[in-house]
Image (cartoon, rainbow, N blue to C red):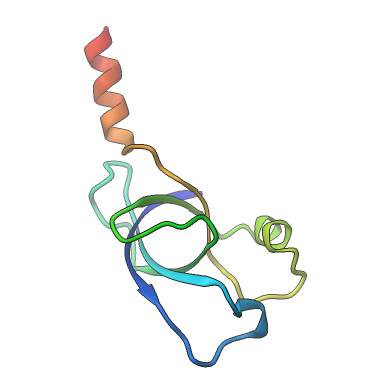
Length: 99
């Protein structure tokens, strides 16, 4: 699992049948600081309704994809597992202020 920032959406006129009707997003994986890019942008499948500017939790776990989508054989590599409430660094700063 990794935190990523949604930077765009994608459309495809020709795609694998298991991707029909799925929302495709372009997401930039982030380093632990919540700001720095961690590699190239990725194409992710979204069923949660994320939009540009949202921070999301993504996974490339094949078992999770099979269970979430009910598919045994699909080219889905990355999918959205959840939407982050706030960046990790904000939580760390809030905790240190309480001490």
